[in-house]
Length: 390
Figure 1 (spheres, rainbow, N blue to C red):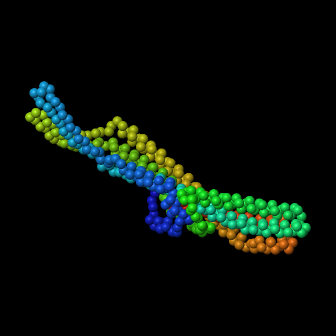
Figure 2 (figure 1 turned 90 degrees about the vertical axis):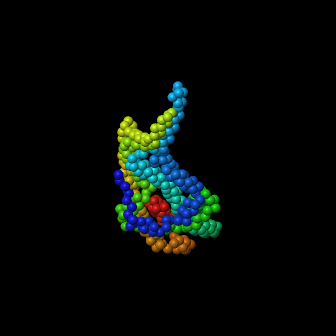
Figure 3 (figure 1 turned 180 degrees about the vertical axis):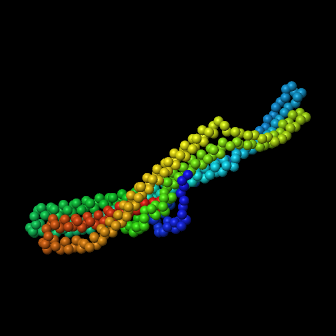
């Protein structure tokens, strides 16, 4: 059976740095009712996995017989016996219980990872919406100044009605976009507070943490593969079926019972040792075959999921690398722009037309939002790639 092997030398790499929005994640684990309930359920499931016996309970039998005719007297029997399975059966059954207990932990970890990832994604959305709202706030200020300028010009007869209307329509359009961005921000904080189970929760971050470029996909994947909860769940299922297959084979061995027996009749007492042997002839061959087929099916599912995960993460990894470069290039290019102040002066001096001004201003602010679009996509992709570290 294929297994994961954890390289001890790589483990310190997982401890490098805190995950994004670490304080939010701590608060989620402390407050989210679904996670709190799932944690208790996982403990209950682990306890349930160990319910039952590894060794059969001892058996005690007693009987009292009334003789007929009465002259022969009465008789009573007593026997105490203990059944013993082969050591290999007990070992396999204990391993299976441990795997079932591990499965409860893995199920909880999958829910925990999904919940924490959702919280991180909401935080990433909030940072994005806040910065977009700030861009539109500055753009609104510029649009208000423009509308006031053309109001004065129109009142003085220095511009046409078309230019005046164009300035007013530009202001209405920018205000509408700013309102939409504010609504999206409000929705995201509401979703985060719902997840947190705290209607007054405050999230103040306004920027993304820098992300690192991994040396190679193969090295990165080798370090994280064994921590993927979906693969761990499938590997656990395959291991359980393997143990069930081995247990079914071991249960084919005879089961012995040893005990004490006593028979008492009038004037006579018989005491001694009782030995029994149970031979599983009829049902066990089918049980072994069924367990083997279950193991083969679960191993195939594990291998298929592992291949799909490798391909999917490789595509995401290369997209992540490209986005890091793209965001860096966009920010470098944007830093070379002179802002809208020069455009304002040129418009007021009559050096450019209103339409040229609006085109340049739209390009400037749209370019800034484009940077946040790319940064937001990068952040979301980064969170998904590293969600197994939560």
